[in-house]
Image 1: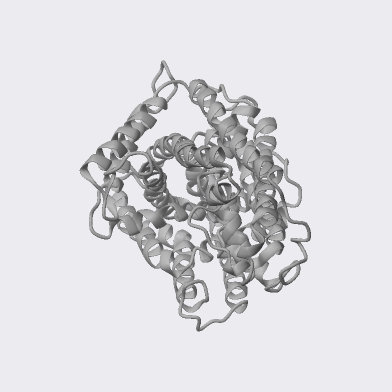
Image 2 (image 1 turned 90 degrees about the vertical axis):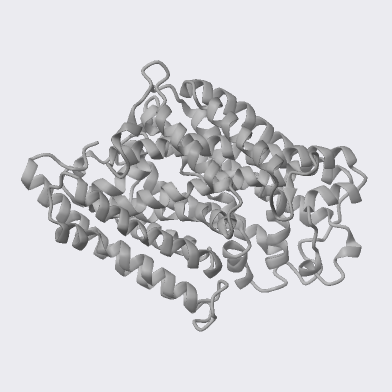
Length: 517
């Protein structure tokens, strides 16, 4: 792969992957849940995501590699964990298909007959497939060409929210909104946590890991990656804070008779613009509703190709898919495979769309696996190779694992009841690959090393069913989230011990650290 990416290219990749069409809705949902105190939730989301990002930054700076988020769990925790994480990443291609579906929903405003009922019509499916082919074609050439086009898309994705904030405030705003209508925290400060988890705030800031998967194509990753990842998070959080303030201060007074919970729009900023006679802004927002998920899908296609390339290196899928074009430095076969998978996810099979809508959340498992990996690498053979960019990894890694576990849990039972069993189905793929592969360790040893992930996924499934995030409520809040934290902490130390023993045994057999890329 060609090392052409610099600071601004990586920052634009991270920002574009974070900001999809969700910015059009997140401010309203956050205000409904926590009122003006939602501002604290946005700051909290930025800090939590920044904490998780520190772990991944250390990995990217120490071991830069294309699709590194798929490779690091294999190095640290063995083939079972590597296969299950890789399988979840392969399934998360459905997240890109979901972004393309979102584009179709907004495009229906301009092109009739895209939908037949709640599924894509034959015409709509043709448009979606054509868009998928276009996004693949735009990723076909050098990573430098990809970065330049994504930089332009990112400028537009920044410009429209900025114009929205300025236009709304210029049209008139209501003073006292941070203290009127029940005060700054009308539903209590505990609602800030509810907004963080269930109000979509965490997921609006999620996606910051994208630059790490391009670490193998980065100039001087040790210097560039940390700054680009943290800058992308900071820019996104600042944008969301500005949008939240604009929403809080410009909602008409007559709509607040029942407090912030009573404020409801189908298209919050678009309808606000119409109420305030900003018809030009409403048109611009509808256009951005197509462009924003388009930019996220564009980056998603690029990420999927790097993941598929890494899966082939892991031997989770045939190694033919890791072939890289000598001319362009792009894994073309991986791009084509992902195009096929995206099209399959777009097909309107019965119940299929329900699966597509949740699989993007499963990429969150990468965060937890990376926290284990950085602790294993630090404690195991070759630990001296860590970049040392992040001080305090001894406590940051377990805390990051706990936060990552909460992110998965906060997805809610409605999503996890489908997603977690599908990830566990990757056990069948592991056994199939084991039978056909050249294995240095016994099956029992691999199962013992990776058992922590199977138990972890099972425990999250049970706790999700018991908890309050669309579960049965048998385990009330906040004890459900506290229980997840305690279980996650125990699993983390188990996983680190297992990984360290596995690395030490491999090092003794070969004389070379398995953490070496």
